[in-house]
Image 1 (cartoon, rainbow, N blue to C red):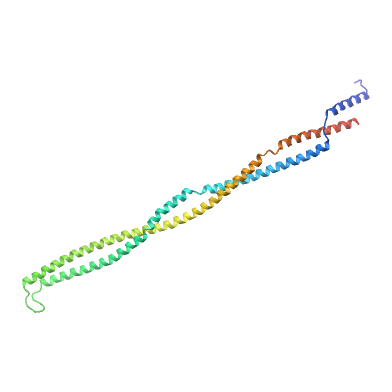
Image 2 (image 1 turned 90 degrees about the vertical axis):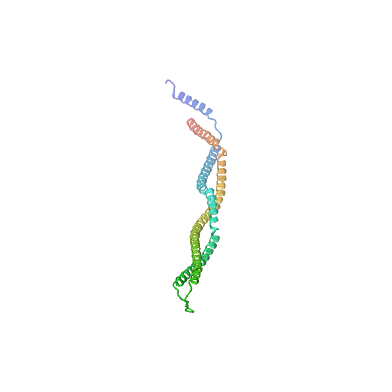
Length: 272
């Protein structure tokens, strides 16, 4: 309190000089230029990092979509359809043989029907002859009485023929029924083959579509492989030490130096 103004100024200047001695800085212009360069470099590194990050994000999105498409294809489904197709084709391939049997049965049915009709006619004729012979009293040609022995012999012969005709008619009718049953069975087989032909056409279309999808899937696998490689490259680029941490530390040091420079200027102005 007893110090004079002059003494107080002297003490203040001494304090300023002590502070100035503690502030050791480089050429401020060089420092400021380095600060600008480092700041620009840091911004470029951050920008490049953000670009790589966005590219990786986009690629990962593409990978997700392509991977989903690849996984949607089922090789097991295609294999199962092809095995099923082979089994159906075995049935379809029997068509020609079945159609041949059908024609044979139709031809046989026509012939058998004719035989039934012929045997039936023979039987009716034989029966009619026996009825007429039984009531015949005299020969229609010579108008003489027909001996009993002659009539009996003729009736016996015609009876044998009638019984033979009845047996033939029964056999031919049974054969016709058998043919009709076989024809019905063949008709069912043809219907089954036609059903399998429809199935074969449907499954062939499905297999074609699956094979096309398989080809597309193989292409997408290559695309997926390329995308993964590209993303790995980006990740490796991101992992490279850009030195940004050192740059940030250096910028902090320079900022401190710039602050000290301003402080020094302020202190020097106080000396004037």
